[in-house]
Length: 596
Image (cartoon, rainbow, N blue to C red):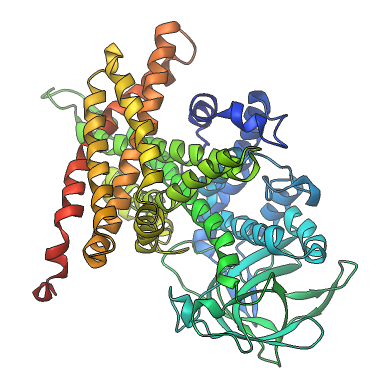
């Protein structure tokens, strides 16, 4: 079976050519982040992903996890791999040095996260959830909570979870019923049940720190009455040592379509009187605080989509290069060739490759804004980058994950019949990818956030800032001899995006149902055009590099970049006008009483 190999050449291209590393290096704490340092970190991470995590991916899928008297046992080799992961310092790379982190820029840690997800997404979910819990504690915890919990969570000695939904709630968090009653000593007793809790119980670490959404006694109904609580599996003594077992227990683990090696748990709090909990921040602001974790997790789930897409592409490409079948088109009676020579197989592989490269590039550019929004010394620049991050996070989450399902499905198609056989491994990527458009907010939730909070609320101002940058690129392409045909094509796609955004802004208040029907298509449209923006940036830069040094060692990479952008333009950007037309005109058909 083909093992994962990190796409280092493309990742380094993204860092070197697309990401504003000069800006990153100027942000507080990142002054030592040079290209050489970034390359070295990526190369070491690639070794760990390929040699340690990737070989466990198939085993984890086959073995899954086991629930045994309330304990959850992970697949063979999982615990040893996690111990190495922690010992090598890979946990929470971008966390502050104050608590033992390495303070890497988010763009670099995101590329490394992609490696973990490409190599073994079920494993990568554990540190991803821990990182979200770290963010919430760092920003809203008390000094005492940060000092007691963060060092061991940052190191990976303890892991973290996010406990949101319940059996009756689903995505409607206003229906959460878990209760927290104050004990009079500053703590609370928490009772209730949570479902779908990733790594809610496992045997990898000595403690698990649960972040739990619950209602304090007397809280109002609805989301405004939710609070955020810290509930450790084992109570923690003032000196940091572990105390008694808390009243939180795993009732079962879910039997899932994919990510079999990731324990998805049903957790019961307070079966024996109440789980001891600490309030995070203030009462009745739980959802606000939980969004700290959710936004981080939504971005990271988008990265999962990129990693899974890369893995599916690599597996399909390797098979297509090895599988000999049929003569090449146009050569009747010619020799049998590898199927990578067949036009439709090449089309599928290019769909996989070009979209994966577009997603990677877009996610990396957004990662810079995540750091600049926190750290830039100028308030107006922080605000500008925050607007960019807020606008693009639902696109990263929704578009990248939906693409990962399509790309993994294409990977099976490239394999033909054997792709449908579990033994080849191609099917696992589709099964694993299928959850990504669902958890941390379905694609519709991301799309409704995009049209409501990110477009209608500011009249499309943040989107227009991005569109202005796109139009500048389209004009530049028009002046580049070998790329001049791509400029008008890109302009047409930008026009379609702008038309759809204008429709949302003008109609959101007066016909929200019609606008909402087109929300997911709009998210897709935004992703297609924004991904094309980054691929066409890549092509322009690559063309300039080739013109300056046509025989350089990286000439092949630059030529591939131009090929990806050209293919993407004619196969994917060309879809933009049709998607926009559906957004503007498609509501009536979907909402008609006779439709369903």
